[in-house]
Length: 201
Image (cartoon, rainbow, N blue to C red; front, side, top):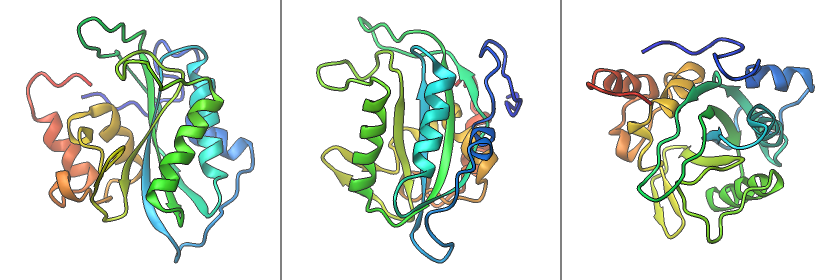
């Protein structure tokens, strides 16, 4: 499995690392290190200005109330995977942002959906596997396991997704994933996934 920590992955049209966006815009922390919980947010885009959507998401996440940006993983490009009868669109740009936040999980999810809407994302009546301008997933929220209508944390398929684990392990390798992760860290989950035959993304 090749590492994807370059500033411009092949085929991304000169995509900057999302962390560079944060530095360039002088984004500051919104919560002290002894407050809140660590939350990991998956970021993806395969429609329109992919790099612009990813960069916008990072900026908005860093500016959420009661929230500090801990770090951002490298932006990687992966082929879209769909289901029969659903056009998944072109290749995705993916990254992960790690936050420290005092925002409750449900409220944080609602904020993520608002950011998606700001970039033209429509969820209602659209197949979940179709192309999207921006996709923000709440992957991990501290050591909490949540299984409620519309909110499942950790993300139930994150341990199977290289495009999630690779940027997450790059920015926070020691982050423990509860529940489905079996108490393993992001790096341990990535290593286990890489050992499986035929893993593409």
